[in-house]
Length: 391
Image (cartoon, rainbow, N blue to C red; front, side):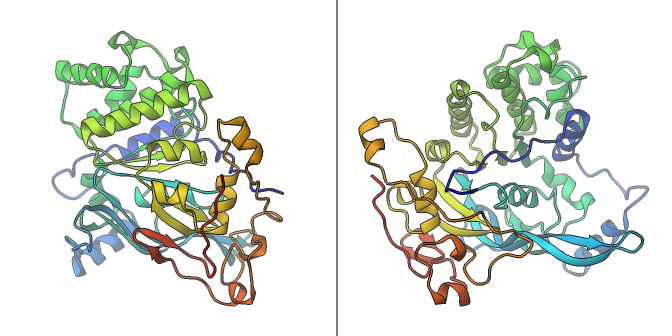
């Protein structure tokens, strides 16, 4: 990529039954009495670790934090060899994140494709096993809980997927798609289950008449509303929205974003909103974190991030966002970045942005800048932070 263009959407979710199965995994099932008939080797190891150190409730520094991430790392091994796989490296998709998500707020996570945004969301939902660090949810350390121990928590953590066309099983009716999490949880059945499904459809702006229709009979915006209804079925505390509007027409993006905002106010939801569209993030987020090559380079509240950005990478991203005033857009400074983003397989030493930064000096190539608070509530990882007027 030869410029600072905002990242293109990540690859779509798995198609058809695979995506439906993934959604079912997210939908919580209560722990059945007694021990399951079979446990995997990893489950047995995790349960042994829990017995030695149950983890229990972890006292958080911020009592309002629903999610707390400490030095989170997710590395994917790279192997070589046809008969005997030999590890030759690792893709550092996420490499040392520290942040918290407060109850009832929306934290926007932005960055280029390949920066690690979606991997971060999946690690928090425990769809991916963290390589290192800690993930705490509602005061409990869930970093390495076994699948069995995670079941009671899964109803509280739900996801909205990027592609509304492939995240819904085309062989199932809308009613059965939304009812699936409720059946797994086992709270409702019969008339009560059907009434709850109708209630969820109305909650997201659809008609109960749509109950027996199939996903192909709906538009993209309507399909995403169905996905939102499915995510809300178990009354979650945290919803991880992974690029929920990037696959939609521009004309319906605002409708879906406004719906998410209304649902948050009505139900008291907490969002991790992952996106590449900075204008959408500005509309819905309370705070914004900017990721680059697996790390957070800047984090601030919405006003601080968009009106007083400090990191050069943030300057470049915001300079690419069009403004509705033609005269102001004509005067707007355009910041072009040199070269392509480095590979997470072999990231640059020290500051990972230094090969593309116009302010880089020797210290940027030898000393990694920590994420520190420069202004109240405004953190940045840069040796030479600078507030820049972008018009």
